[in-house]
Length: 147
Image (cartoon, rainbow, N blue to C red):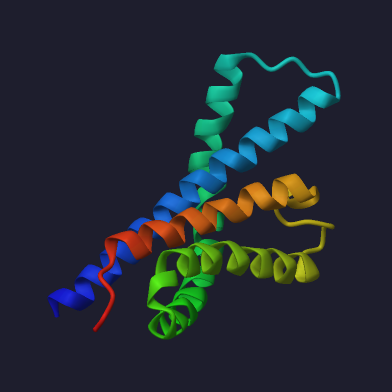
């Protein structure tokens, strides 16, 4: 029972961590796009926008991240049993690649061209993928592998 609770708490922490990183990344990419159009964005405005997105964008992004990691982690666990030395990189890749797949699926069904604005460019997509990758790395680091 305690082992299952530990897995659930570690998973929740990984999702929260990835969500926070992704939300902050999304905000900064959006603000950079506005600046490229000539908008002046002060540090207080940048900080307020980041806080607002942590409150407003995070719940939707947490759902995407949670479902993604819930699908990606069992695959990483299975492969890491075959390649135990690659455990951390496998979870890192599972989180990042999982989000890439989730973005593509979401964009296929979204009424707008991209559901998450930061994923409009390859750099933005890669940065958003890193949020899931770091969530995967955190989970793998905190969660002991099964014998």
